[in-house]
Length: 124
Image (cartoon, rainbow, N blue to C red; front, side):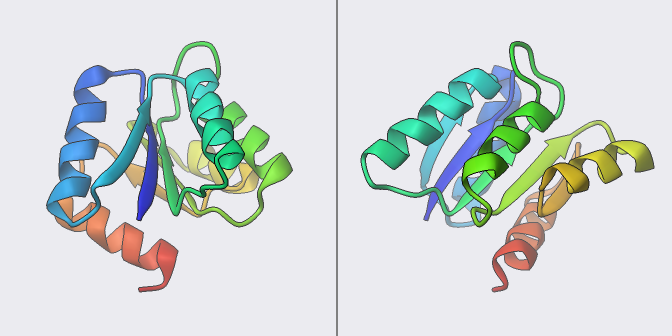
């Protein structure tokens, strides 16, 4: 399974990637903001590859997670997207869902929570 992870914190990128590896996902591409994430998404598309799931932070420089989600949803309605963020307020969750995310994960989270969210998103 190919996974794209966006977060402006290198520490969080490492934590999320390591957590994904612990629950069995090893083909992980990382990006430090929405612009870089969009470039990685397009690079994969150009290579005729698809991401099975995308995880994006909410607050990032250059292009926020919401802006990234809107860009992806304008060309791809199907790839599952989960937002991982410290922004756990109801208004933020509603904005993210309206933008097209499939699920919302509030930091901090455990490997078990991440695994459960992936299962819920992918219907496993």
